[in-house]
Amino acid sequence: MKKLKFEKLDLKFIISLNLIFILLFSQNAFAGPQSTTYEMKDYTFGAGGNEQGGSDSTSYTLFGTVGELEYDKLNSSSYSLGGGLSYTLKANVPAAPTVTNVSSWYNKLKVTIDNGSNPSDATFLIQVASGSADFSQDTYFVQTDNTLGANQTWQTYTSWGGASGFTLIGLFPGTTYYVRVAAERGNFTQSEYSTAGSAATISPSLTLSLRTTSQPSPPFSVNIGNLTAGAITTSSDTIDITISTNATNGGLIYLFGTNNGLKSTTAGNYNITSSSTDLTAALEGYGARGTTVTQTSGGPMQLISPYNGASQNVGIIDTAKRTLADSTSSPVTNGQVSFELKAKAKSTTPQAGDYSDILTLLATGSF
Image 1 (cartoon, one colour):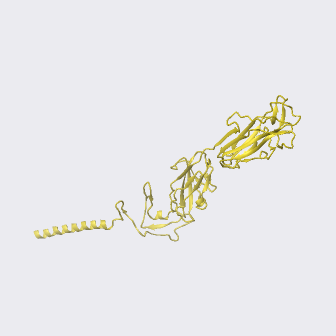
Image 2 (cartoon, rainbow, N blue to C red):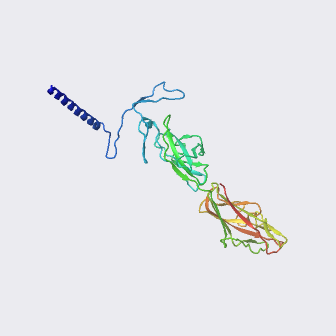
Image 3 (tube, one colour):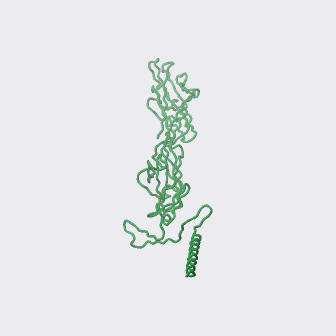
């Protein structure tokens, strides 16, 4: 009896050892691919699925799969891995779009999206947030007319301008805009949003400076000189006005006077009336003639008729605000216009030493 009892105990001991060996062997045999820095705990091949007739209607389609499920993504600060069939079906996530302020824009930005190596028939949704980098507030979608709106608008990469991009318009000045993109191709394939690109609009600007040939700072006075009957007299100084503006439709310079001519109070308020004329043929007159236009960039500046006349042709200076020059409907930097004054007296013009006019120069931007 003792011998039989000893044999049973010995058998149990051997079986226990075998079980331990099998468990250890199983762990090593099915370990995932690994290195010194990672180990893939679970991976599969050939997940099955089907899509059969009768699995859809006018309002839904059923795509059935078996053998593989996924619930979440692996993420870090620098990558995101969506493993499994549903992530395989999704469109590729585009890279961050390129957003730039091309030329001191205050109400628009240039946007170029990335197609994420998606097929040509993939479509893209562009979301924009003003002032919130996490898209938690003030979010909109780009519409087909390149403005912002509430409706989701999907277009192909080509329709969004392709590699050339498009101009996002109707923006607020002095605001940072964040832009991100999602892609899709068919049903149930919308990707996550890309990381965001951003740029800021600037504030509208208009600067003006004024000087004469001999006077760099105010107050300014221009001496036409002594008028001789029948002769045309030109001011020794030119008047220079310089503007810079980022106005989309450029800057304009206006000129107007106070007296509608050269007026003398001592000569009974006699007025050498101003008009747009060729002083060579006129008996008497007074006006302005543009001489030069320059700019550092933008524009270009141009003189406007009747102030762009040649030789002795002058433009009227009266109380109406008249356009002297503009920047041809474009933003301009240091756009300068120079003009001179001309006058002619006739033999019956009363003599006096106080013939004068007060000129006003006005600059505006067409925003």
